[in-house]
Length: 105
Image (cartoon, rainbow, N blue to C red; front, top):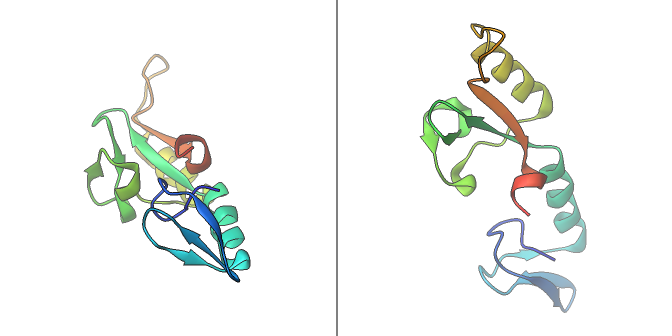
């Protein structure tokens, strides 16, 4: 299992807890599953103009997915809709929402 915190380490059973071999994060089975479920439902916003992810709260940009903001589906839709309001039919969207689960694997 991949560590949801560092996304590099392998999470394995250590007594009654799960532990990451890379960043030493520990989880109960329940908390690990909750973090993984929450990540499935979150989105990052990619700026095609800046070639970077939006930071949390939409304040700036980053090339690192680890530093990117995590947005709910409804928030990502609203933010992208607002950012893309002045598009012509032939333009590429300025901002695109991307499921975290698809880009962090």
